[in-house]
Structure formats: C-alpha cells, structure tokens
Length: 109
Image (cartoon, rainbow, N blue to C red; front, side, top):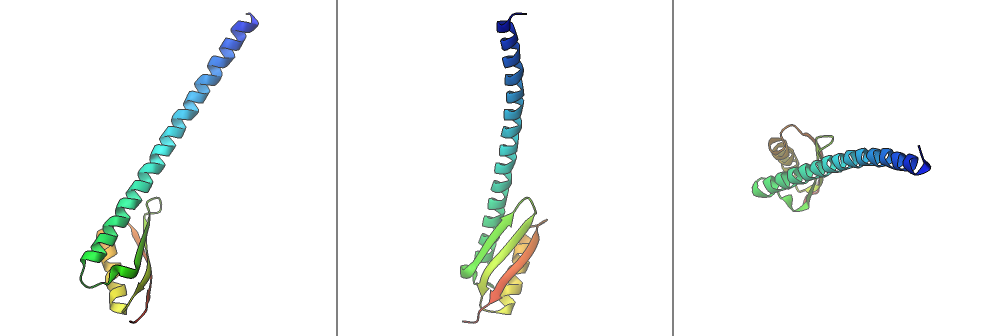
C-alpha cells in the first residue's frame, strides 16, 4: 500500500466519523429547537388564557415555560390573593401535564 493510498483510507475513515458526528449534532439541534418551540407555544397559550379570563389582571404576569422539565412558572404581581389563586388554576387547566410554580406576589392597588 502506498502512502497515497493510506492517506485516502485515513481520510475516508475520518470523514465517515465526522458525518456520524454531524448527524448526531443535527439530531440534537433539532430536538433542542423542538423543545424550545414547544415551551414557547405553551407560554403563549397560558398567557393568552390568563388575558382572556376576566378574573385575572394579567398585565403584570410573566409566564416562563421549560419543556424539558415540563414546568410553567408564573412571575410578577396581581392585586389580590384571589387573582393569584385564579391565575394558578388557569395555568393548570391550560398546561395539562406541566407542573405549575406560582411565584406571583400580591400587590394591592
């Protein structure tokens, strides 16, 4: 086997390994993008439900969602304890299968 042939064989082996790594990278990137998209959709759905429900003033509510941990976090403030409780119930109804973390504070107006 000549050096030229040996170099071609080594290059072929290395490029096939690189293709495998690239494919794994593409799969991981796709999974991450899908997860972020799912979290974004869940965030929008919960926020829209809070806005649409007349029991809650959603102006100062921030919704964060993690698809990997299946968690929705409510942050910000509402004017009453009843609205805090209602916001959590709305999020729970909207985000089935997600854990709801209610970090809302009550700040009377």
